[in-house]
Amino acid sequence: MNRKNLINTIREKRSCLCIGLDTDIDKLPSHFSKSPQSVLDFNRQIIDATQDLCVAYKINTAFYEALGSEGWEVMEKTVNYISKNHLKIADAKRGDIGNTATQYAKAFFEKLSFDAITISPYMGTDCIIPFLHYKNKWVIILGLTSNPGSAEFQKQVCGDEPLWERVLKVTAKCSDENNVMYVVGATRGDDIAKVRSVVPRHFFLVPGVGAQGGKISEVMSLGKNDDVGLLINVSRSVIFAGNEKDFASRARDAAMNFRDEMKEYI
Image (cartoon, rainbow, N blue to C red; front, side, top):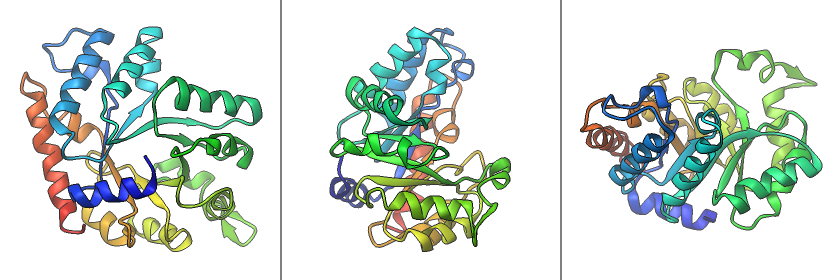
């Protein structure tokens, strides 16, 4: 999905909701068995119930890799089940150089039908460039996260600026806003505003809304640009909104509440 299509989808749906399929097998509703097949069945029902309300799905690969080879197969079947009209994000946080990065790119963009992948930039632009060779694919670089440990590295001064700002300025030169996004945490509004001032046109993938305490109103008012420029991810607060047989309809209700709040700003 290219930038124009993504922006059009956001405006048509009046939503920038990204639903995180961080499907923890131990948190499945009680009527499901604890099996990889149950994870797939759960995901399909969540997708069916929410696809008209969101513009993207984010699959955190850790929850699938933890299930072994069957989990990898479930991840592949899940991403294939998602409509091509949604941006499909692999939250894999890969970050290696040279031929290794090239193989990661092949895995997620060729063997798996993802549109985007999250990347840790710690090893430099070498670990980003191989992913940029793919047309209409996105690299989502960790920018400024809001987890407690983020200050240990990201906010340390590098020269005359914090490290997160150096990361944004350097990586933005690898390409442009047409295939590079940044992960920006939602739980500190002033951080969102700071990042937006450095990269005014890029899209942000914003985790932390919902269970982690981030607020839609704050993210939209401080992070939105002329193209909206936001994918606000919600995972647990949507997919685990219910724990009974009506879990899918409860997930839909939760997703609709988040979408309706976004509509005021789009």
